[in-house]
Amino acid sequence: MKKLFGGINLTWPRVIIGAVIAGVVTAVFAIVPIFLNTSFHTITATFEVWILFGIFIIMNSKSNLDSALKCFVFFLISQPLVYLIQVPFSSMGWGLFGYYGYWFIWTLLCFPMGFVGYYMKKDKWWGYLILLPMILLTGMSYMNYFSDCQFSFPRYILITLFCAAAMILYPVCIFRDKRIRITGAAIGAAAVVTLTVICLLNPPVYSTDILSSSEETPLDDTYTVAIEDSSYGDIKIVYMEEIEDYMVHADLKKSGETSFTLKAPDGKTREFGLTIERNTYEVTEK
Image 1 (cartoon, rainbow, N blue to C red):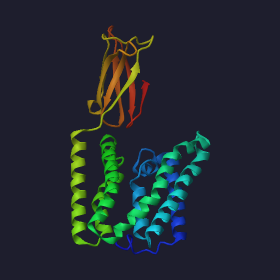
Image 2 (image 1 turned 135 degrees about the horizontal axis):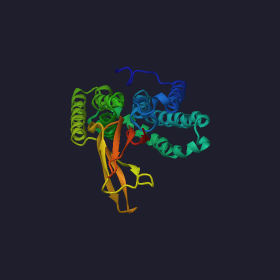
Image 3 (image 1 turned 90 degrees about the horizontal axis):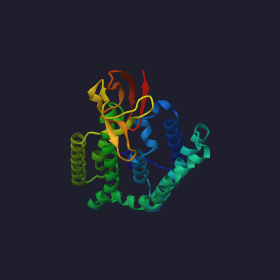
Image 4 (image 1 turned 45 degrees about the vertical axis):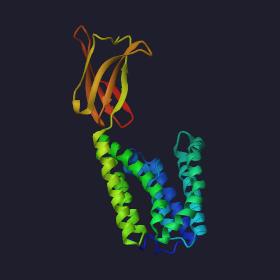
C-alpha cells in the first residue's frame, strides 16, 4: 500500500496513459445501461474516486510544481474524454459538453490543489489539515450513497464501502508518523459512525405525486387508495391547492415493484403497477 502512495515512478507518459484509461472507463460506465444506478456509475457524477486519483498523483510526484502540473493535465485529458466518447451514444450529441463546465472548473482548481497537496508528503500534523477537505468531500459522498443504498439495497453498497474505507485509510496510507496515522484514522472512523447514525435515523423518502385526476378518474376525497406492500411506503389522496385538484401522493421508502388499488365511491376499483427508483417512478394500469 505504501508503494502506491509514494513508491511509484510516475512519469509523464504514465500520467497521460492513466488519464486516457480513466476517461475511457468512466465513459463506458456512463454509456452501458447495466451500470446505471450502480456504484460503477457514480464515477461519472461525483468526486470520491477522482479524489483517490488526485492523491495518488500527488503522493508519487517529485515536487510541488510536478504535482500541480500532473494533476491538472490528468484531469484536463480524462474529463473531456469522458464526454467526447459519450457524444455518439447520447441523444444530446455535442450538447452533452454543456455539463463539462462544472468539471472544467474543478480541473482548473487541480493546479493549486496539487501544488498545496504535495505538502502532505512532509509528514507533518498540518498535512492532515490539507487532506481534511478531501476527507470531507468523501464524507459527503458517503452520506449520499449510504442513503441511496438504504433506498435501493444492495445498489451503491460498493461505493459506500469505498468512501468509508477512504475516510479511515487515507491518513494511514499517506503519512509515516504513527501519531498522525492513528489520529487521522480515528477521526475518519468517528465521522463514518456519525454519518451512518444520521442516515439510519433519517431514512430516505421519495415524495412525489404519482397519479392525477382525469375524466376517467375524477379524483376527490370520496376515493380511497391502498398500496399492496406497505414496506414500499405510503400512498394517499391529497388536495393540491396550487392546481385546485386532487392527486395520488406517495411517500416511497425503497426501490422495487409493487402495486396500488384505487377505489371509487361506487365500489369500482382500478389496479396499477408501480415501479420505483430512487428519484423516478413508473405507473402502469393492470
